[in-house]
Amino acid sequence: MLKRKIKLYRRAKEVSLTLASLGFYNIYEYFRLLFGIEINENTKPQKIREALEKLGASFIKLGQVLSTRPDIVPPHIIQELIKLQDKVPPIPFEKVQTILKVNYGDNLDKIFSYIEPKPIASASISQVHLGYLKTGEKVAIKVKRPNLEELIELDAELILKVISFLEKHSKTVKELNLKGVINQFKKTTLKEADFSIEAQNMKIFRNNFKNHPYFCIPKVFEEFSTKEILVMEFVDGIKISETEKLKKLGIDTKDIAVKLTDAFFKMVFKDGFYHADPHPGNILILKDKTICLLDYGMVSRLTPAEKLAFNDYITSVLTFDLNLAMQFYERLNMITPKTDIENLQRDIEVFIEKYYNKKLEEINLKELVLEVIDIVRENNLRLPVGVAYLGKTAINLEGTVRVLDSSFNPTQRLKTFIKKSFRELLKEKLKEGKTALELYYYLIFKTEEIYRLLVRERLTFSIIFKDLEAHQEFFSNQIKKINYSILSTGFFISSALFFLGNKETIGNISFYMGILFLLLFLYKNRKD
Image (cartoon, rainbow, N blue to C red; front, side, top):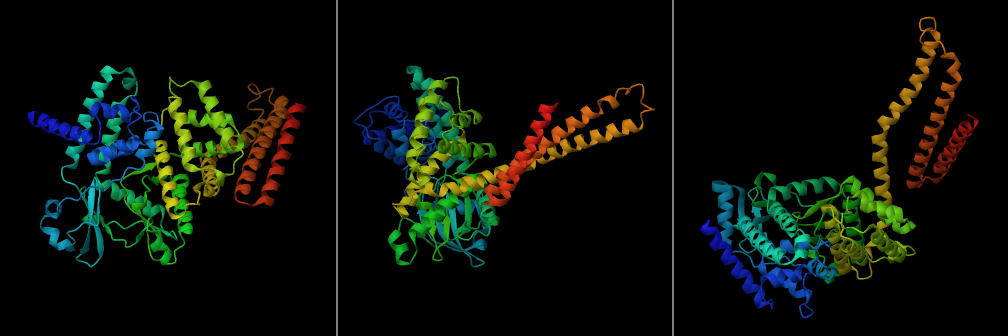
């Protein structure tokens, strides 16, 4: 217990001195500025970001988590946190060797024939070394920094103590539920520090992009990977920030921007499982123009309901449908007791009015996301995790593709994916509904069969069903009306699917057949 307190005190002193060197009065002032509780015109958001970078692994990850929380952090701070650079000095190779020996024991020399002492990359959670397996494969060896979990736990405890102090002196801080945010940060960072989870993420992405023509994910050597070490194939490529090198090799950077955007929209709208940190350092271009994505520690998911809600939200903007836009916030359970519904509706209307007459390619993705962030913050909305990370990812993606081509706008590729996503979701819903529809038909046709059976056996059931024949016409008409209704609905749905598949002729036929059966249904209803 005493040891823990001493470690906590030393870390608090280290953090305070770092903040003081950057011009912050104390740790409490820093967090008040970070969360927008205190405004100081002399303190630039850039300084707040630089402080997080200097404080190391835990604080960098905290900044990344906070960049997804517009309900807590002001927009001008979020814009800066998204730029966080995860670069720290490497640890000595002697320490790396110790970690390797702990994980492999006597098998170390049986697995690797050579490991390059100088790392090829160094970040807050790990560093990467080039190596060769005994079987000859060139590999990248990702090694976790020593005592990382202890540092995360220590920093989380320190930040929680700061928040407890701030809560005693500010009602605003108490209402923000910052302790919940810190617990989320701790959970996220510890998860990212477990390389067995990252290896699993890479397997999922490899499967999702299996046989993809221009997108690759490095192969993981699972038999040599542990929670602390990730061994994967070495990918020799050029960083997308090195545009001059790419152009010298005859690589069209605009084409790469389009393909990269398409790959990310596939992750979001089709797979619902996406890479949440697409900054230029994580993307390589190979000589055959293949795009290779690195670092799968920070990923996120969208549920089918969230994917459908996003489709509807974009549709609501393009069609000026305020009710559909409101449903987005309701269906994702974003509305809280503090939300003023009338104010939210007004904000949505202003938002939609701005974008309604614009073509998708005219919409700035970063600007759009930041305006949605404003709506979330101003209306005390709750953000689902998958949705929160998507905002950060979208802003990162736009910044990354503009490195490749400053004139390229990712939103111009959005229409195709929304259309495809809607079609996939509709197919899923139709599959789910198939059993119910089959049961519906079964009951209808069996009702007629049961009725005919009862009529044929009227002597046996004459006492119980003596008035059954008198109601024969009524039952028959009801069954016909139900059939017309089902057929009409079926034709309208199939018409929508054909139109989505660009089969307009068949779509038109299905549409008119739907109208025919709808008219028959209405005629029968009126006649009865």
